[in-house]
Image (cartoon, helix red, strand yellow):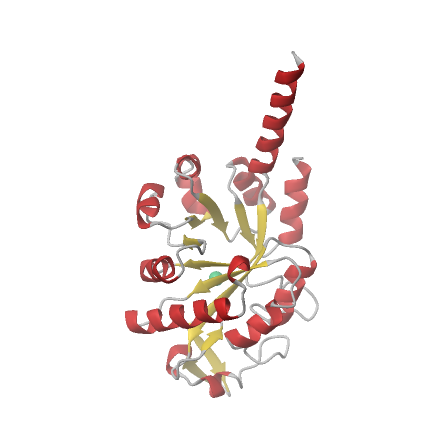
Amino acid sequence: MNPKNLILTLLFSHFIFYASAQEIIAHRGYWKTDGGAQNSIAALMKADAIEAYGSEVDIWLSSDGVPVVNHDADVTLNGKKLLVQETPAATLRQVKLANGEPLPTVEEYLDAFEKCRGTKLIIEFKTHKTKEREDELARKVIKMVHDRGLQNRVEYISFGVNFVNQVIKIDPNAPVYYLNGDLSPRVIKAMGASGIDYHHNVLKKNPHWVKESHNLGLKVNVWTVNSADDINKMIDLHVDFITTDEPLLTRELIDKRK
Ligand code: MG
């Protein structure tokens, strides 16, 4: 091989290496630790401490229009179930997470995120009862992110097509991924989204969607991949991101391939 070809080959293999190494997203933060809790500020800081590519978080709009952090549609307060979107923020603040933190507002979460060194924040917009409420949540949160100058460190995901469309409309430069698993990469491309973020069973059924996405210039994220067997299967499929409750195990398995 002449020197020029050798250099090209080395550059190309280098590119392939980086193109095929998966990035890790800590699902609801890195919460499986002492003092951890899903969607807590502690879990966000721990995702940053282990240098995860991203830390995922679920958000809602309270009844009085405050963006708040929670996974489920409801919370339990004093033995009573309350729907997050029908409860004012001051009441939601009384809810304690498993590690004793009060349920955070998105402003508080972003205060903490500003102190993170490298992790990105992957914000999941939960689907609400009306389009108006969803639009209000998207508008408010994207404005908060921009007001803080954090737009290059935040990505968005949602099961709701409306949210994906809102992000594209309000912040066309923001990465946004669709979660629901029912749309082909071609449709996602036509919507203008950045890629698919599907359950691992969806990708097992439709493994060709990974290559199809890449050919269309889309990225592929997959959730929530926790067993070594599933993590290995997703590495084999050459997805770009793995969303997991087991970020350290995932890193170990990715590193084994290097
Ligand atoms: Mg989520």
